[in-house]
Image (tube, rainbow, N blue to C red):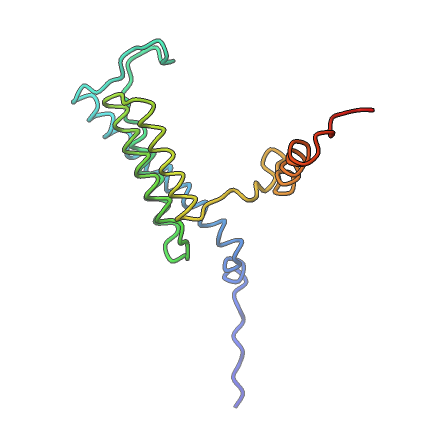
Length: 176
């Protein structure tokens, strides 16, 4: 007796394509992040108002009224949780180093918002997080996929042109 072949559902086949799944994951991460930020801003503002945490007016600030300096907390919560949830089950080895760097940057930013730390301390933390991302996380910009008309070949060709002009042959801009 021959088994009757079950017809495949075209809808399931369409959503199992890797490109479609990636698009769904990215869209869900963005939507989740937006929802988390919307839900976390009111409690953060309430804490800032009850604890009287407001940025003082300074010449280098652009705001015209007092504002709580804790907006980065909502962005941190939204980015971190949506990144972890949206990449669940995917093999993304660099994520732990990205999250570690985001946490370090978050805490230095929070400390700066509350205590105004020096620019030297901020740049030291930024350099350390960049080194963590590049060396341990192997995170590099190798291709911009056409954003602002920039591709991998454009960057490489610009590098080759500059190194040719300034490295081996200084007659590049000389006209005879």
